[in-house]
Length: 551
Ligand code: ADP
Ligand code: MG
Image 1 (cartoon, rainbow, N blue to C red):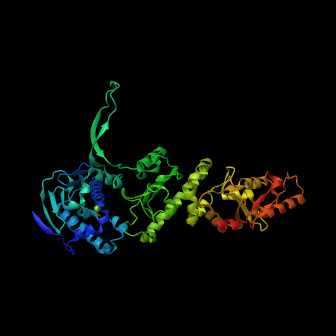
Image 2 (cartoon, rainbow, N blue to C red; image 1 turned 30 degrees about the vertical axis):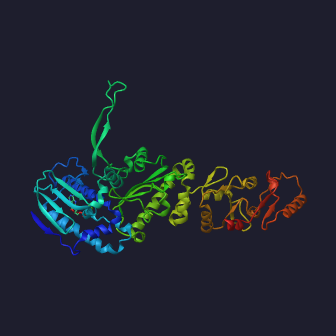
């Protein structure tokens, strides 16, 4: 047996690790399972290129918890390590990683966001364990080894009897971490971090119900059998080719991601790029109306199928954080703060790629099935309008498919609207005047009056529409919006009206004078023309600017 001392400058690094990683102890399991996965994938690679002359088989990773002995075991059937490799990768490499981490982030201890995303690797085991053992046998023909370390820089290394290839990590759980000895806790962590990892992960057994045999009687219980409980789906939809997936596959993956979500998504966007950065994923447009889960079910960020976070702020443009789904990229730096993320070149490219893909998808949905797009408009408009306001690039694309519904249930793109009204709805300065109503009920008579004159009236009732109107007014030439009850109606160049009023012009003037006498507030205009073309006797309008001031 050999004793050794890990060569570090910080005498006892483990209390430091514990302290700095305090808020995120749970990531130890993710890190150890990631290592087990890496080791298995390496073996797969080596066998596929003929370097390892062994049967790859169907390896899995197993997690076992022994509450009485206070142990957690993580076993894999990967490449394993020789004695030299343990010395090199565990004593030197892993340790220098931990040391480097502390060097860099000692002072940033308070920013839990940074720390939680730093893959500290193997040594994160010491956040929950007072002693860690590695029993490992390499796929090479060399004896197995047994490494033990109690959290001080000293370790022991000796030969072991292990016969099967692979690595077993034994954690002797510390007194302050016994919560991790609960099956339910481990299951929770596995579901959170490892649900889509590429190698099957077994945690205990489960009972599976088999189909009843043909000759079974009606009240015979269905037969059951005990099978491995595999907690993950090693081949989630986003890792497959879009051509290999049907609409139903995307829907069932959505249910897998959000088991508590009963509403189906409206549509999906499959992301797949490998240059100049690597990114895969599937985004879903959910029905946002009346959705209480909007905060909870968010886009999840993965790195090579390992869950990292569901806070994608800074990586996905803000207006798209209302979407759901996953993005997976090894190119997103996780060990940095949010402000750094926003300035990072690769991350900026990722963000604009996602914006572009979403815009392209919306555009193709619009072109391929206009009717369907119109039906979905109410559910997707908030995201699109918000995007048009916040991202110029998105505005340019969305301007071609953003819809403006009328009070009569028609939908126009801006260009269509423009063509429709350009001859009829201009004012004295030749500005195009877009009339809209914000409330069909209360503005009913104004709407009717405008329609009677042959004007189109939009129904603009979404929460940020007033901002979008301003944006359109500034980005398009010669355009102004006016609510139907504003005085603009007066300024429009008049078409020939078909008069239905029985009053003469003089009589109207007289009536107008009387009404003015009754109205107390200033600034309102009384239009008697309404009675020429609609059932309303007259309408009272308020200047658009006054109304906006009150909002
Ligand atoms: P990283 O995974 O980023 O390389 P870690 O600290 O997690 O850093 O692990 C250090 C090294 O230890 C790994 O690169 C690998 O060579 C070795 N190692 C850790 N766990 C295993 C395992 N289960 N099987 C084989 N090798 C392992
Ligand atoms: Mg690792």
